[in-house]
Length: 310
Image (tube, rainbow, N blue to C red; front, top):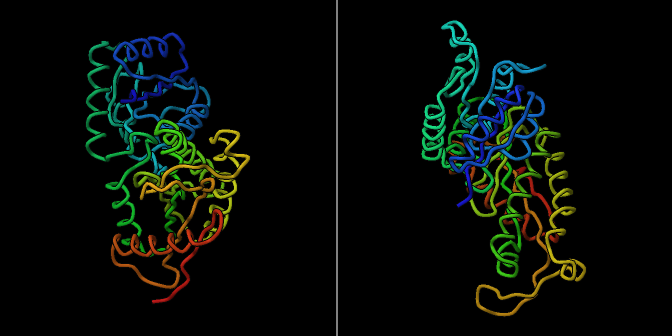
């Protein structure tokens, strides 16, 4: 099992390193950031399981970092523990108004900090069933996000993303290399949504090689085109050079027949409420699966947008 990853954000290097040593001694994987901008970039590139955040940071304050994490639907359930020298009731009230999960005052007891970290990691794992590989929200949070879309009378677009020939890659190269494909795909999606999407767009990992994005209809074309472009550029590099040059791999299919499988492609089915009304997340999912199937029929990576009316 992979180690749970914690990001410690503190501009005092001695404190940051102390926390790092304590948590690594408990078996956690720990990364450090010394300012808000750097921390947010690390979160977007490789989402941690938990954040320990100091309030006093150069430039962007800890309050602002916490707020930006909470504003991003993809990281809204990421546990945040505020760590600060401020100990007054007023300071704690201000800090808690930014919705952290906990508040620890310096100087702290090592046992207390470790205990709080473990409690929040355990709670979060059971509450949101985040995908353990990509750290993106799973089905429970996805259903909540779709319910919010339906409850608000505004336009939305749901992108269902799926990889073709992923199983063949796994069978040929092993699940460890398959995991790298999924992590790379997640990073591509996170990067593109940050650059081309809206600040509050939702990104989820349904399971296996299935991902989802909830955005607005005006962002669909830019998101799909950029994801396809980046995927087609980066994913071939995960194949062995000989197979990449050939453009295919040879392995067994589901019926145990030896077959040639082209390099992986990504297919995207896009559901919007521009021309039709939806009443449940299941209905949106059914249409998304249908559209994704149409996209898979096309040669290479592609996307299909539903333009049918009720």
